[in-house]
Length: 284
Image (cartoon, rainbow, N blue to C red; front, side, top):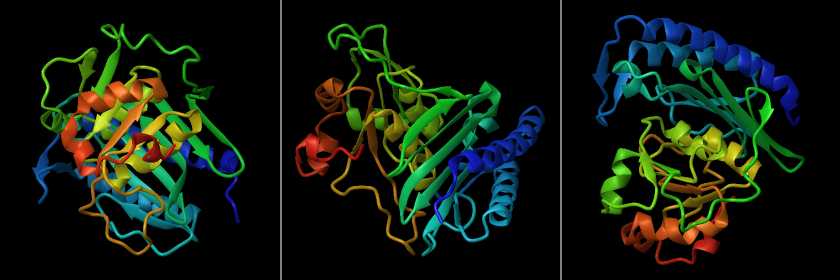
């Protein structure tokens, strides 16, 4: 049975509100983080949120699978699966920076069709769906859409481009035609394009729980999503372990900015793609 998005949205909205309220309380108190094997941080709040969301989704959608950052990272061999990042931006959270969120994406046969990203400190709920029936995206209930008239590509000195810290090393540049912003939250970095805050964003090492929800939202508004690797991202292989798999990604608001963005991110990524024509690598 195909889900009814208008029925799912209130369930997810209520769930992320419950989790967000608890995380906000934790955020205002002492935060203790430890390093995981990959060097990233994790807190008790991450693990509590992971378990709480997983249990709630399994109760509300018993026929759906669940993949979580802090739990099982094997994609279930099921038609429908939730992909959860219970606290995206843990380092920000642990260091007292109020930019972090909760990300939930729903996959159908390995491809995202619904995404919901809650940013409790910013009081933003960004969500959308894209399937063979319809596509739409919203922020706090208001429709999201790209500007009909993009800025002049030669006059971007007062426009933003979002990047992660690992991306800068890959770019090997110190001068850019726009102002860089590094927010420390993979999902939100990419979503700034949907919100109209940036003209583009690049993430060097996002995992599936970082992108499952935002891919749908960006697809719904017609943004350009370019995987910076030789293979398409979706559909994902069912039954596979995604704990170590990264999905380097470039997102651009309008196609005319793509050549400039490709030049800026540098040859190292493009060479890794086998010099494939960029137009053949677009997935949205």
